[in-house]
Amino acid sequence: MKVLIVGAGLAGLRTAESLRGAGFAGEITLVGDEPYFPYNRPPLSKDALANGLEIADLEFKRRESVADVTWIFDDSATSTDYQQRGVLLKSGRLESFDVLVAATGIRPRTLNVPGAEKSKFSLRNFAEAQELRTSMLGVQRIVIVGAGFIGCEIAATARKLGIDVAVVAADPEPMFRPLGAEFGHAMKHRHEAHGVSFHMNAKIAGYLGGESATGVSLESGEEILGDLLIEAIGSLPNTEWLAGGSLDLKDGVLVDSSMRATAPSDVSIYAVGDVARYAFDLFDTTPRRIEHWNLPTETGRRAGKSIAHFLHTGEVLAESVNFVPSFWSDQYEDNLQSFGMPGIADSINVVEGDLMGDCVVEYLRGNKVVGVVGVNTSAKLAPYRKSFQETN
Ligand SMILES: Cc1cc2nc3c(=O)[nH]c(=O)nc-3n(C[C@H](O)[C@H](O)[C@H](O)COP(=O)(O)OP(=O)(O)OC[C@H]3O[C@@H](n4cnc5c(N)ncnc54)[C@H](O)[C@@H]3O)c2cc1C
Image (cartoon, rainbow, N blue to C red):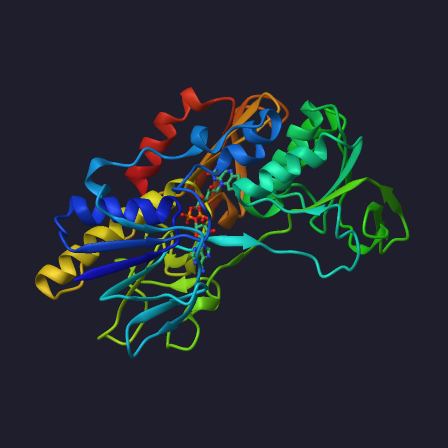
């Protein structure tokens, strides 16, 4: 019996560990398109960009239980043969499977704007972080397109390095979608206090200069100068290699609470981590794809356990999705911690401090708390988490 996991990131690693933890003794093969064992991505926009970390500083510790896993690096899945149960790799190698796990994460979405080929960057992996750091150290001004978490974290890191930063975004406030207008507005002030200039509700009309950018022009006619452009405008799930079957791949791979995809019942396909879309039973029945660091671990654990259970009993594991999405973000000296789903709230309640300083903020949908966000208050969040878990 062979489980093939495609994607050698956190979710792939946790799935392999969970399979072994649940007693699966068969073959496990992990395919990754990068040349490294699974590593931690959050430092890529923070420490690794500011200080230039090595890959050894970022790699996750791997449990003894997965020492016998077969790793294939630097090769990517290009297509799936559902009838023959095989995945074709770019190298031409064909990997068979009894159970297939998609753990391929996401890639940055890019703007379809021509030009700036030599000075345009996005950030998802170690190689990109290294390249971006080297290039950033050689310039005075950068323009970041997009004001989500990644865009804001890069802005904060660039300011630490003494680089002038302009942020251009179509949204009205930074981190508007995950954290709402009021919180985003306060975050904008924090960044402005560190010298970042924002151009919100703005659309890019074009890149200035030739292959080496000199800035961007906006649809308003305004021009913003910068020698390096970073596109941080969201993500696309890596699912192309799964096309041609009956999976629902509208936005990532739709899976049920056991992380099993809606495939024909005789083909066992699972998805985990950033690429998986599923309903969080704590909130509602809408399947969502959420890119938070704790979810590759939660979904990997669930998938490993579900696969082992299915192979052992022939039955699908029926457990609700009770994972609480959680993330943190470091920007300047500020540490943001969040749990729940602030992005689905319709109002907020500042329960401690104020939005411009250290604070705890509850996010409500109707009168129900669906998320809590703290700034520099991580030590105070435990009772909020406990109360959230008791009421959900
Ligand atoms: C710069 C950055 C900063 C972040 N900061 C935070 C933070 O502060 N807090 C937080 O909560 N979260 C943060 N995150 C998010 C967090 O890192 C992700 O949620 C997590 O890495 C997702 O894990 P994953 O295993 O699902 O995907 P990944 O870690 O992306 O792993 C997927 C792997 O599959 C590979 N792959 C893709 N396609 C193929 C293919 N066809 N064949 C083979 N391999 C393939 C990819 O190259 C990758 O190696 C950050 C992410 C980034 C990029």
